[in-house]
Length: 517
Image (tube, rainbow, N blue to C red; front, side, top):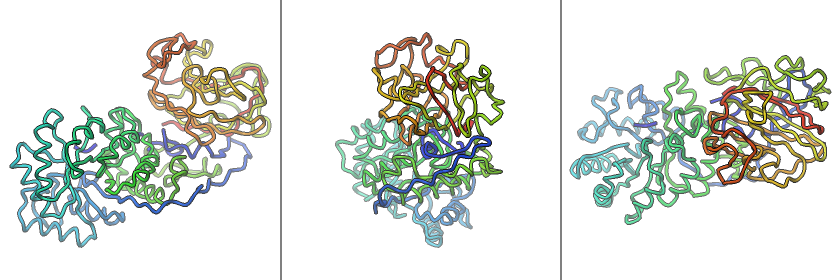
């Protein structure tokens, strides 16, 4: 019943923004690490309440879930139907439990300093069953119940929920599962005839699994958002699973910033559905990230400068022994190219190390010997006035690379076509912002590739978020403009070599760090 992206240790598909400012070192490099970015402005006073959906801890009893919730410093819970109660209390968490059992459950909660605030996701066949649920909710002192009636029954069910919500003084929140997943705008429209006691329990993970951007969905739900199941997933698509907040594709920091913008007064419930052996540790990391995010400024949240637990701004930490081994699903970032260039193919003398920088001598492109599918690549580059270069990814043919590789553009100076600006997916997608590339200055770029999704971060700004599936025709972009490629980008290889382009103008790279996702 309970389902982006945070996933990898160094970077993630959206929260990896901090790595764009990292001064990481290649093997044998002597580059100096930069200090962590400081908050631009003080964090606002607005506080978002954090809760626990008991489904996160469904392998144990409700009593065990309460105890573990309390140990995390989380003080609110949403129960789900039919979980075994435990703790010396017979029965399961159902609205039909008798008064004595209800009293014991409330005493259990009180002894742990936890308040039961919600129950769901629940469904009922008729008004009598709904009334039983509302009576239970009122008796337990709940703020709301989370429900999910089928969309084709809304016209019949919503008037019943409206009436009973007002009668019992318990709010109703409409939850969303995928397949189908009702867009929040549809729910908002359907709730228009009713008061604000009927609202939305937005599941940001299920939105992501359905291909919806969680932040856009939060915006669409703003007028009715009462609570949410907060998640960070491996990708904005299916299949996807939960990862520690701040390390996935769902932009957890951006979600928090959006809730803050809305002055959200409800509860964000932790709902972690990935059945990983590291479940409790990953949930604890999620709570820690949330607490860090609470203290951050809006600017730092939006820019992705809030670090998840065990992340670093310090380049010296990138290759520290054992880095990333605290979770079995996190890999260790490594240099893409060492000083021996053993992972590189190029014409002799075409690329050379000069101190800590890999410099083109205008002898052709450099390609990795290894292939990479889903990855996060961070590098710094430096060019002269008028320099033109790029980074190729997933090249399936390095001889005919133009039509068999995706190029992330590097350009100093203006371009006649915005799709040729620095950071663009060359000839296909313009960056969201034009970042000035200063001759002789190091700039930092992060490229994140995960299945059909690409993200480019240039100098700490997310400037590209691309869904390759939208490029359905060869030689044509989704906006109708032409491109020069003989292959539709949706059909480009999902794994291949990485290349550094020699375009006949000065270009240098350093601190090339890659992590397989």
